[in-house]
Length: 122
Image (cartoon, rainbow, N blue to C red; front, side):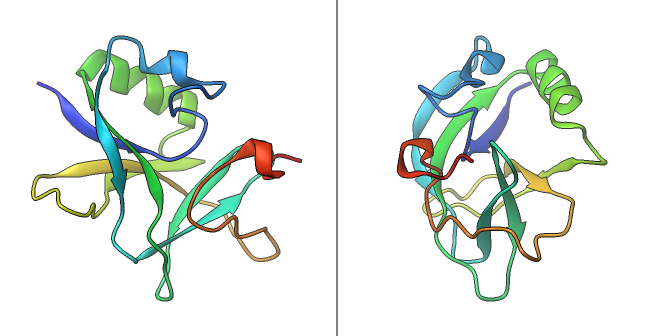
């Protein structure tokens, strides 16, 4: 059984960890509802729930169980990141994303899109 996964950072097409999606199937470009913020956590971003959130841009993928297990291990679930439901525009089904579990105080809010070329990477 496949899971719909929203990716917003280094797992996106053309980014350094995209290969970790393996044989996952790209569905479309997607945006969250305005309930989240994206912060720079070193060389990668972290998604968090925020009362004053923004529409975060990313990609929607269909991912098989074995790939999700590998991604969970890589993302440090449940300590560093946690995979849970995220609300996506125009997507009535259940979609999951990796949420950063650490503190974001003092971290740089990178806006709606993770873009290393724009200086989001240190």
